[in-house]
Image (cartoon, rainbow, N blue to C red; front, side, top):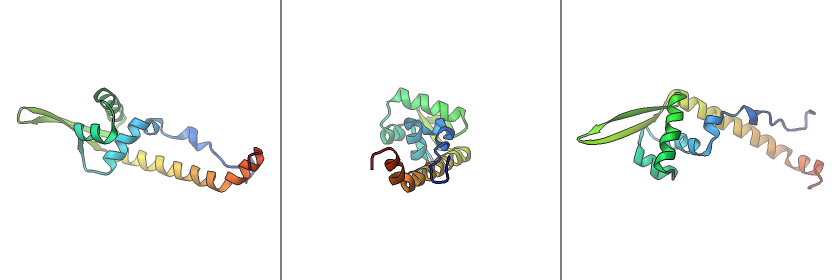
Length: 118
């Protein structure tokens, strides 16, 4: 690869757990608040209950999200909180995307010309 060619190898290094759109929506929501209950995540992500539960379990198993279950009176509740590991993973993901997009912006016209598109 020449120095002028973009390097997109980081794309295959992206954390696929974070990269999945539904999980990214959950992590992004939690990054903006101290904690969120199940209903709030349903409303902000647009996921259905089953999808939200499944994705939250994967994030919890990875250590990216902490889950607290309890009762408020007789009503059950579930609270989700982004862990430091989850915040670090989200920060790394954002940095990798920014770097890749910057390369794309700086090489766009050259790449288009090489492909016969510009």
